[in-house]
Length: 300
Image 1 (cartoon, rainbow, N blue to C red):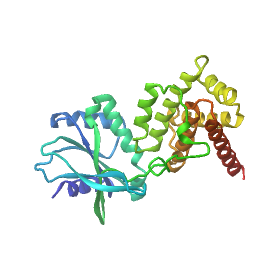
Image 2 (image 1 turned 45 degrees about the horizontal axis):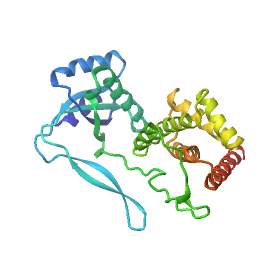
Image 3 (image 1 turned 90 degrees about the horizontal axis):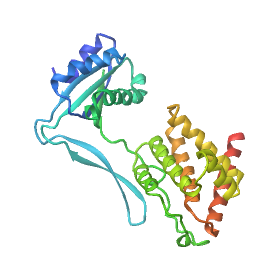
Image 4 (image 1 turned 120 degrees about the vertical axis):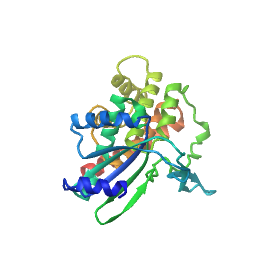
């Protein structure tokens, strides 16, 4: 009897017939597993099998998405094999569910459990999600590693405006902390994480432009005062409320919706980093038009 058959039999006695097996790079040792199991049980994390997994040879691999561009600029994503080295240590967390619908909606639970372990036992307890396998009653197992995705920035058209000319853009000195945050943001798979990092970069830039007052006052002074736009100011305040929902309240928001909000925040970042010029005025007009169209669609 293999591992998955054993899990199915054990959890089947509790009425669970569908499973999500997750494999994490980890420095936990076999002797540590009883303590992990006790921790999960004490904190109400139920129907989770805990084990270690070590590839015994060099034949194991994970699948990863590689994004590249063709000569015409089209974005392409290709699945490639990445070897999992022999004798590397992995924590295997297998979650049981009564039905497939429950399993389909279980991704937040997996993230909660992994980060609970990281916070208590240390980040190396579940450092990186290597792969996920779905299996269950009357279904073939399906393994995946990276989730395929294309963000609004992967498919973005290159900015090559000529009226006014994009190469004439004059920027404020870009704060180093903002540059580092943007670098991390544009590499994120999940739009919620990307949005938060972009927002932090946005705050760093606004603080470099306006040096007195609270963050909210600085944003208002820039968009309403410097740019003279009530529409842009209201749009930035709306983005701030979204940031609060994500960052302070921890609310989950539809990924497609967040992708579009990342695009709006990107446009606000462009306005914040540009010096006064014809180009900035053109960007502001476009930003206001998009905001007006969004409001009209919302109230229609």
